[in-house]
Image (cartoon, rainbow over all chains, first blue to last red):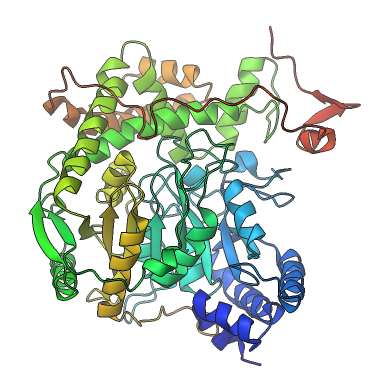
Length: 498
Length: 95
């Protein structure tokens, strides 16, 4: 039997082959990950809840079904679930005090499909409260540590956010893959910060049913894993039409894995001039140029394009997302479920329950959202943002008449230190400058780790595609992955650094 | 830009979000800074443009008005703050 480091260090695809060939059982594979979690989670805080017994139970069931010749596409593979997906009988907190004891009596569609396909759930990963943040610092369950370190420097760094626990867990080899959700960059930015792959699919590709809502016109689930192929395997299970989500799109789910390795000859790749942030490091610019060269080598044609409204993406997002958040989070009122603070009047019960239940960033967004939707301000802010959103969408629609995909940096910097950028919300928001426009337009985006900065931290490039053309993103992402040969390992990982 | 204290109190009240008097000055600064930064959109002329609320299909799907789920009393009550028999029990919300 292989040891813990071998079992946790392999890719999800390799683990599936190993299980198929009988090289190890799902129980052994799952136990290795649980051992790694036991060793490293006290430090990384990547999981809010670890469901060891349930994981071993489903691993045993998976081994039994495989022995019967009845294995699903994810049978026996241990993965982590962002604690924003409702999981039947397992506490689901959204990293908020107001849901700290919430145990859903139902399963989200995305996780139900993964279970249907045989996945083993190790537990629920940490996140920014209600997925609002870019550092995982806003979690009511504490910050998450990025397993990567600057060379010769033990400073704890953020994993990015909001899917920071998922990114940290996958990078540190505590899970073979994980689910994330992305509203403005919450899969792609933490994937870049932790040196892993993550894809936000097209809006409507994965059902939102049973996922705690933040901004419903933007929220989209997607996979995070250590390779492009592993993300392709996971997305096939996560995606699909669901009658329970009115925005779910009824179209077949392709075999994304089959798209990997297909010829990219003649594919037109747009390079948008507007994706150069002021003060962006020379290293990121150089890596972007390297990515362009790699895709050219793969047979792609490189085309300069303009998405002229890009610079307005973030400000538009910070009207639309808080507006939707203030509406969605109105349900947490202390009355029917969640935490309650008793008071003499109903209004005081609402106000005190919400004051005690929500953290500072969530409160800021509820207040901003309430302001931009309030009488007298609605037209100036919310209606205006909806119109600018139309311009952002048009930028992409027009670019995609000329090119098949776009290549940009994922984030304007590498991971920063825990506690940095916390004094000014706007500085924190700038993390999502390159990821937000695609969210506003609903188009898919994939982040791939392609290199390290001078301090030894991973950097990612982002590929954006036409709606429902995730296959091309996987094909391009795999070409970048192959060219970059990113084999660097984080300082903290299963078997190392506990 | 700074939002005045009365505006902070008004939106907090609309949101039913309790805030302490001692938090108001901080919120004036933080929210004012965010709103001030958002003001950059005023550079754009959006006259005559259609607002969009999302990127999905324009019309929502209809479905048959039929019962597709039910008989889950215990599951539904599992998060009830308190119960009376098979009924959900909450504080009085109509005043």
